[in-house]
Amino acid sequence: ILRVLGENAIAVRTKAMKCLSEVVAVDPSILARLDMQRGVHGRLMDNSTSVREAAVELLGRFVLCRPQ
Image (cartoon, rainbow, N blue to C red; front, side, top):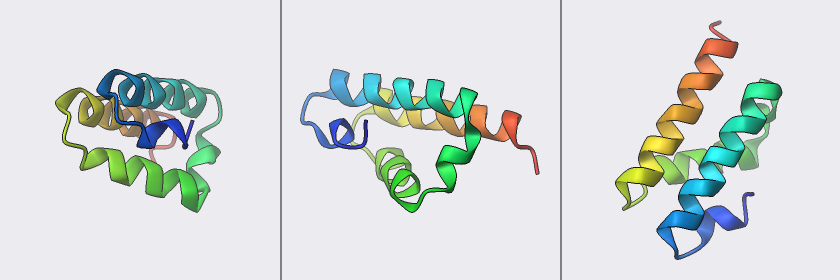
């Protein structure tokens, strides 16, 4: 998933963020990995609105799963 986050196609990056969001819903500890944090952080600054929205949705799921 992390490799796909760097693709040129907006739709591919958006789908990758949504897939990662599903993974986080099942195992929130995945975001403890530094490479995952960098990947999400990079997508929060993406040129595409849809990619940024998917990254924010992922973080929202993470906060709901791990409010602390």
